[in-house]
Length: 77
Image (tube, rainbow, N blue to C red; front, side):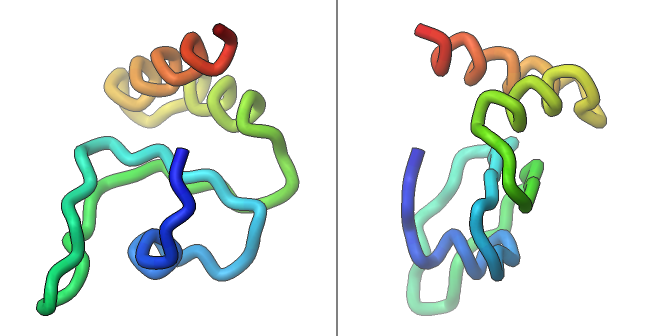
C-alpha cells in the first residue's frame, strides 16, 4: 500500500476512497513527468477486501484475476 500524491494524478483519482491495482511495476517520476501503467481502478465506498475479491472474480484478464488473488492472500494473512 502507498499514499503518494503523484499516484492520484497518474490514475485520475479525484475523490477518495479509491483503490488502484497496478498491473505492471510503477516507475519513479522524473522532470518529464510520471510514466503511465495499466491498472484496475475502483472509486467509491468499499473495503480493500471487497475490491480485491471483485477483481479476482470479474477481472478482465487472467493476469488481473491472478494479481488480485495474490494480494488477497497477502491481505488475509
